[in-house]
Amino acid sequence: MRAAGDQSADGSQYLVEVKWRGEPVEINAMSRHLVRVYGRSEVRALFISASGFTGPAIKESERALSQRVIVLGELRELVLPLEQEGDVAHWLREKVRIAQLDRRPLAVLGTDF
Image (cartoon, rainbow, N blue to C red):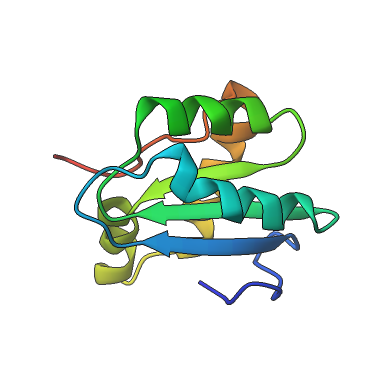
C-alpha cells in the first residue's frame, strides 16, 4: 500500500488511516479522516481497523459514498494477501468496486473466520 498522496494501481489517490484499537472504531474516530478527505478534491478514503467498525460508523460511511469513495477494511483481510504475497492492488480494486456498485463501504474479503 502506498502512502497518502501517491497514486495506486487504479490511478486514484487515497488518504489512508489505520486504527489499532481494542474496540470497534466509532464514527467519532473516523470523523477527522473524513473531513481531511472532503477537503481534498478527487481523493478517496481508505480506513483500516484492527478491531472492526461500529454500526453507526458503517452507516455514516454508506452516506458518504454519495459524495466520495469511502472504503473500510479490517486488518485481518489485508493481512491475508500480504502473507500470501498476493495482489493488494486487486484487493483494493475489488473493495472499491463493491463500495461503488453495491454501496457497501465494508465488504470483508478473503476471510475464513
